[in-house]
Length: 378
Image (tube, rainbow, N blue to C red; front, side, top):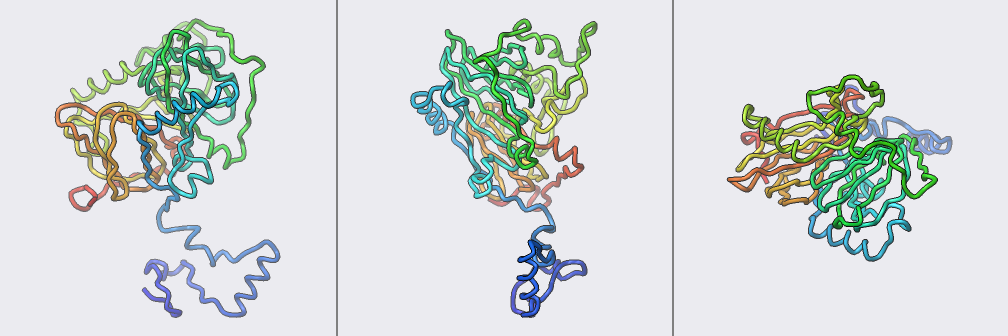
């Protein structure tokens, strides 16, 4: 549709209730007077401020593990962890918004951290919650509020906001690499982020090693005779890869799974059934050999880490090929679908998201792609 001044407008903006004011010299003078009083005319920007549907400022972006691993190994040689505080290679979304907000996608921050045997990350805490996905290595551990937790490849571990935590690799371990995910952009947007440094380089463990996952990690089994867990996050703290993979295999024996995501499991708080953290959620999904998912989109941002296999995802009409430990993101309200290229073996995708925030605010919405048999043209 063409406006009176010749500009092209969305036909929907012509309906009653959408701004379609034609500027005049008198209005232009009025706008200048408003600006001088730190004010403005809402109708000038109303259609952009309140779009017909979500319009993300972020782009689908993929980080090759081979490339990012090499960057992490260079960081090992160039920077000491005790000097850097946290020797993290930050993943920045390929957009102005990503670089401005230091975000991997939307409200989410992500980076990759590598540590040599015997190294530590000094103890600290912050308002932002964190979780980590272990990509390779042996002998890594974390200490969270005095709880010493061992970590292995493809384990998912929590570092809830406000908890003292430090990380390290035992002296007889291997170089370890993991992906960090934090809600830093959200906390900074809310202007609620605090940061503090512990009075010692590391915490002294106050409990037996792996006490929390051994106490609360019994799937549907809930421990009796111990103090009630009153904290707002999952007490499991680490979700082991072997148990997660076996649970997916078992699910696949009795279920066809989702047409969009294959067989998918939520990392949940076993005491509530809800998300493991208050502001970020996480899943592990399995795509059977030859799986071709249908396209859908949703509010909320998702960051994927390929836990195993090879395939591709079509995101916003563009194809992104991936293999083990490549990382990619799907911004909010962007069509996406996943394909496993191996006809005989499964592919596994770990992912984390900001769905708990969307759900708490009542704005989590999902929609299936209806054209072309449910698949995007790419």
